[in-house]
Image 1 (cartoon, helix red, strand yellow):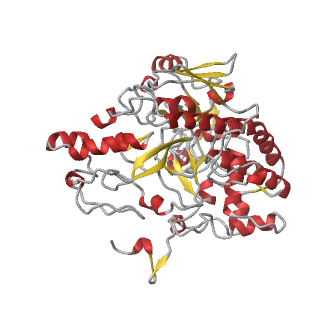
Image 2 (cartoon, rainbow, N blue to C red; image 1 turned 135 degrees about the vertical axis):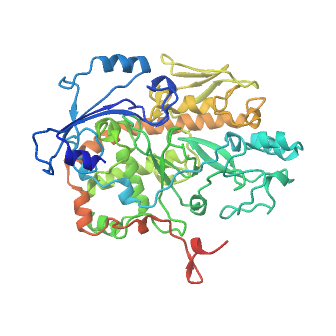
Length: 523
């Protein structure tokens, strides 16, 4: 339709009524019950132009952000010839988004470089995940022991994909009895650690009978060295990191609670999830120095995983999807991968890119004793579950109920991913009355006292965010230097034959089984 309008009209005006994106807060929606993004589109065609004569419409763009009443107020002042418009891209099917001079279009997309991507795990039942394993065990026992069919159905939350009588195959590398969940009698659920939201490690019931869309390919790709990159794919972002990473199975809303697309670094067969020839091409560009997929992942996060990136390309990111300026300078590549390893070690809580000799111990992310950055637990939270969290900027103190933690720099307290404040979100799932979505009475089963492990996990989270924010200036300088130097453009990579030409290469790869691929074997 965009190509048709550009081809058959002379001029157009696009007013984006939903710059907040898909399923934005109700208060920002023009029509409260409509969660889809909306726009006003006006196109004109001159009567004096001969029928069939080809045109190239000039299309203008503006957005109206804010709450509903603020949007209506802005609309009253809009004129077709005022100063608030920006010209959009003029090419074919390109989105009606503002054209920029940033060089953005020259960079390959992450989807070009990491061709297999997928949504994260979609359970459609909030009760299947929780910040402690014990909560999930109690919920599971409550469901299994319920004898009344109507009450069990309410606890379970029946959907079109999962019912009490559904029979489903086990998830890869998992097992469950062949009986449906309505006849389950085992009181011990299978659990797995999951990345519910950015930097928030929780637990998930690993059972295909209770997860609407578990994404079996993701489960098959879980392996000791796996790393998942995640970008926002449904909504624009203008600050915070463009990419986040986790080593854990990611939820479909892992990025910031509203959409996201997962880019596994490895396929289920363990091979790199990159286009054929890309790593060889980059090694040649780096003077023959070997380049691995883990190097590419580190470079990607170093360049895109910070606010300076999203702020610099804010207009380009009105259309979701990150592009990567891929340096051809060996020294910049080495700088970027070094920074990226630090970022990914921190982002995975020390589970990936560990290097004790470089100060990155395996599985230990807290600052050592004596380091001025070490987060200290000054006063105890106590046994009760706190109702609220607060922050004192003057003393860099975080308060959780009666408990206090310091030093917590303001940048750590304010750190966000696509507008989602990470520390606040973490606490929201754990406070006395959690703010997570309620889909079943099972969601009401929560802890009755503050678990000691949550104190340790909070200190670890604060330590992770301190390491990330401390690296922000180096990332900003690095981005500036990369953009000023030689980069491998999309056109150059296409000419070199290292970008995909078909959708077949975007599927996950499995190990062959007797001449077939594992994914093709009937179950």
